[in-house]
Amino acid sequence: MMIWVVTILLVLSVIINVIVVWYIQQLLKNFYVISDRFEAFYQMTTEYADHLDNVHGLEMFYGDETLVSLMEHTKFVAENTRAIEDFYSFLGAWEPEEYETEEDTEEED
Image 1 (cartoon, rainbow, N blue to C red):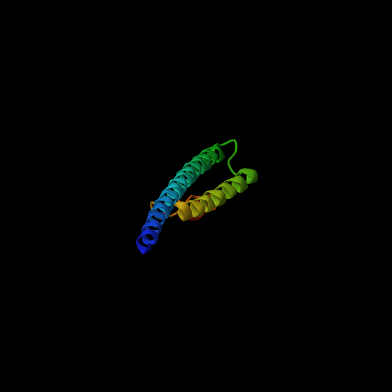
Image 2 (tube, helix red, strand yellow):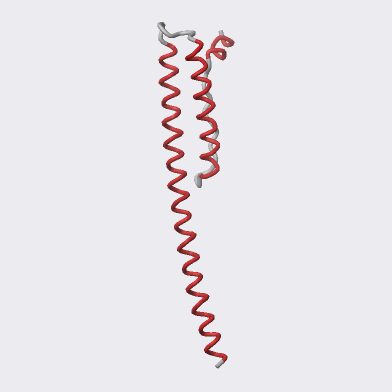
């Protein structure tokens, strides 16, 4: 009688362990997808920031306060996106990219 109880408990334990391992594997896959999507979003945001910087550099728009404000806001969003992505990343933390602002270029001159 005791052997049957131990056998049933062992089978239940194995089944539960298999289910837990499968569940953890599914969670890790989901976290990897989230991490990958954050990386793509961060890349898209930095490309947008570069494009905006190029537009701001055009003679027609140079010094426009709206574009300067928009560039600063874009940099803020990109840095915060990177911080969120670092939380979900399994590849390790990245340092946010540094962007040159109009003020930095004026200080160097």
